[in-house]
Length: 318
Image 1 (tube, rainbow, N blue to C red):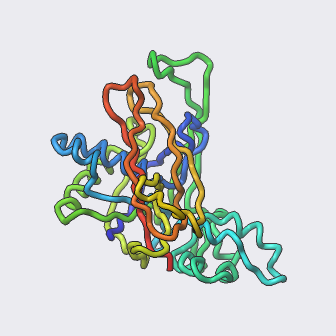
Image 2: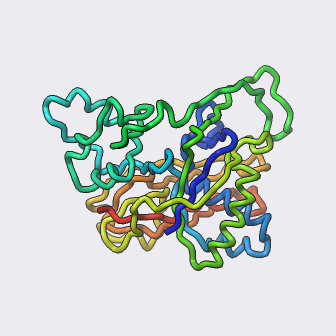
């Protein structure tokens, strides 16, 4: 399992809803968006390989999560929502329930220890209300969000729409922070090809408004935050997952804790929308890992096929 750290050299915008809601941007990158960006770049670098890569990619990616210096954060597992606190700390429950990201040490504790939240220091271990760490060295803000006014463009005519203004949100990360993701590959050759594509993607950018320089980054190898690939036992999803038919066996959801998200968006340079797809979110817990699948989300009006990567990236839950 390889780790890649992304340090942004420009702000980025990733649509958080997939329905033209530009006023808000995700602060992390879902696995399906990251995979699509890699494959779109792969089509430029090695067009002779893209047909096979789309059907069966030689890599499997997690979503891209925040980091600060050597502190890696992971999405809070859905099974940790019930918090046990001593009576004298009950007033802190609302603040603790808002936490979305845990450092690797707290994250591992949340899998097995019902009292894990007692280890959080609300005066020094919380950043922006959604990030928790046992470290006291978190910055005041790991990222900031800015909004800029924009004039709407009609996707069909490519002309400006008079008087239709909207705010466009962009995320700036702390100079010592950014995003990281985990990856597994079919073989060493696949990894080398992937890193070549990642170099090109870093220069061209990820997310919206790349023609204006948004989304550009530098990358380097990082350290695995102590995670192990899932076996046939209890597992946590670190990617979005759309289950394959073979995953949906009798009782497959027993003992699970999950949340669903609806994914949509536009098909680039077409003015057409992708079909919406429901997926399990990062942090979902299952009795065993799901294989997931790649789903055709193209429409009948499109001459080419468009796919969404719903393959699961799972790690051991404890």
